[in-house]
Image (cartoon, rainbow, N blue to C red; front, side, top):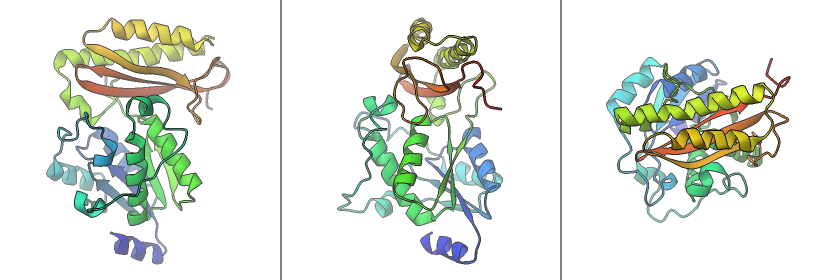
Length: 278
């Protein structure tokens, strides 16, 4: 893969890259279609990265379907599908990791210690291997996008990070590979995440500036649903991820909720009156 990427670069052509953990859905495919318009060659990777899973998380249960993934990637316009083995990326004796000081200590990072160390390490390795000019990540994983943007800037990677909008089911549920684990009743409960985000956006657009009122509304809505457990609900600055005390500028509302045994995340930007994007 490194040699192939080097040949492409030396020819004066460009590479766009979409890293994934596989079990592709329409959200992944939308990233690939978006990326295909950015460069001469589109590379996608499939690798279930063990270093971003905690000891009690679902690495062994993470869904996999490599043949289906390969077919879907080809349909989406992927030119090169990179599917490394764990022993190639983490050989015996591997001990070097990429860490970040502040951004991981928010949101998902608080309940998943070490997660973003794994994310930053694998993205760094993939960037060195694939050598992309552009890399596309989904905005659904808002904190992941933020930490990767920060790492890329801090370490002077020759890669532009592109955020692509969250793709949702017709009822608003954010697409995720983990949705397959939801029972019919749990899937109905999971819709409360999008309802809370939508109501929060309405409240802020109509002048609400107190994040605690929105958080309390969301807590009540989520707790009223069966088999839900809140990990976090936060309204924060979109760059630093620090909690905001007053919503006077655009802010991001992010939440993580367990529905049954499945942990779901989602987010939306909140725009006070007069701050909406053009």
